[in-house]
Length: 280
Image (cartoon, rainbow, N blue to C red; front, side, top):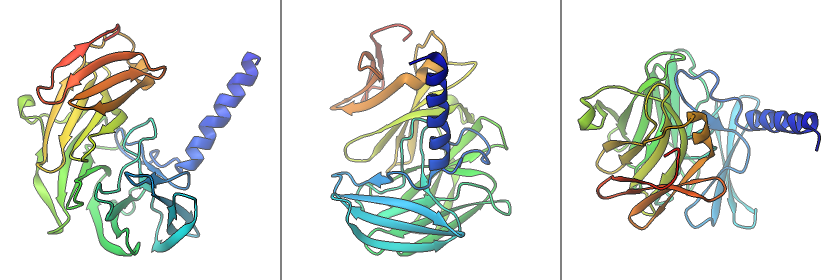
């Protein structure tokens, strides 16, 4: 394929992706990947169910599909909402590991507030609406669906942010930020590249690009509200991080290139990095 044709295909794919997510991160402050509107939606752990959010005339319709694509139920909400993206590789979040609740997020700050809703997956009915002043985005959900983790962005366009916990049972934003105690409470900077989650849904691991510093994996214990930042000895162009994917295998978090070449492993008990190939 000629170079110009390859470029046209790439640009078309990029535009299609932006349309699929509603260009949802564009209005957000900081490194939020936004939300997915339309597309394939988010699947349950056993892939027996899939939830898709679509928008029409200022209304959001959430549809639950079975494994064969049959419609099981629908629910409607006022306003524009989508399935939250948790990383720029298209990783999705919002569905509790126990499968009982689904969180949707607004793609934009409206009237100075960021909006989130919690739905019951059994009925797709509204359980809770959350509206927070400022620019916030979704980060993670505890496996029992009782604790929601949100990213509070410092300012529009700023890569500085901190993770906060919201107690869904009590309807309360917890005062203290979720931090790595070894960093002395400093706010984080960076952009989420890819996400992997432990099989039990308790640990959420996010690879972050950090221009001007070392990239790191943010390990979040979603039940305890504890976090660690594990720096990676990356010596190359951090743009190449977007070719990295992660998976949890036993007691290891494995980082690979898109082609499958293993770059590094992280011991998920001791959080020690074992690098295998440059630029790690």
